[in-house]
Length: 342
Ligand code: CP3
Image (cartoon, rainbow, N blue to C red; front, top):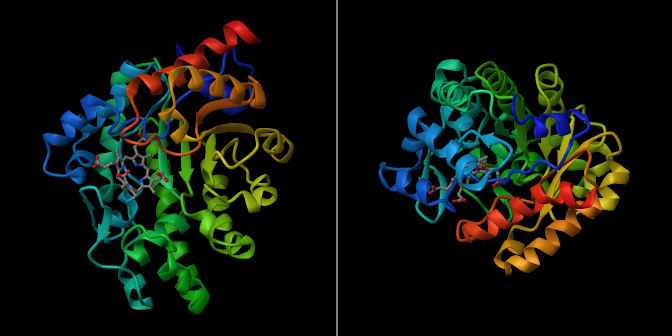
């Protein structure tokens, strides 16, 4: 591969400079995405049309110069594959007509198989072919807990109290749903790797709303199962947003890379995650600042993490109204750093 900096860093090998990509790089910050998005009926049509998904996956590679492409899709492909379709409401986010409330609802869900996510497999194959051996292609899925949260809640939430109610009032039922999601997610990610994904990231976007004990029981053990299976095939990144309270347990995960949000101090993270590659962790809101400040903050971030065993990124997805040249400034500063400072 011509640029395999990210895979090298993920594997813990020496790199000539820090690799960089941006969560949600394939999205509304880019004019090409907004144009393609306006040409389709809705978000799911874009996700389900491999040619268009491929086009918006490649745009940040060409426009931003990132060191990896992440397949354009969504974590909500899994609920849909299991029989729970969603809509993406304009400026509101995901909405599920039906939610999971009872054991019967869980029994009615299927364990998804290839035919339920063939559009993602086809988008990956097409993108892999278009990318050639230029850059790594990243696949992803939500963590079982994060998917559980959407399936029970039916949308985003500030508290996720419906999801949390189930773990406290019906723990057995909650585990049976998490089991089913985990098995489906393992099959899904294996298909992504077989279709060309060079690394997979598990987004535990809502792990941070759990507590120390509940995180271990309802999120981490299921992430660990996915990591154990997928690590046999490719490097795996776990992104446990807001779950810094579980750092010591997270450090025991069998994954190569840990994604960090901005709440975490890089020096502390280096002490906790000794043998891992770290990814992150600029506050996406920092990119609302001026380019001079972005440059300084990005350099300080790299200095704090060090240039090895490190993948530069934001601490969460880039916000859609971030100026593209600010995102570009972040990326360029990372790319120039190695040459001047190490
Ligand atoms: O990172 C990338 O560029 C790849 C594509 C990607 C999307 N969603 C596209 C998307 C990835 C990796 C995701 C992951 C995802 N989806 C997560 C985990 C990461 C995180 O943000 O914590 C979550 C929780 C979701 C669920 C989801 N999808 C929500 C809550 C929303 C609405 C909020 C929003 O940003 O609009 C989405 C919609 C979504 N997924 C968009 C994109 C580009 C915007 C929708 C649009 O074009 O109208």
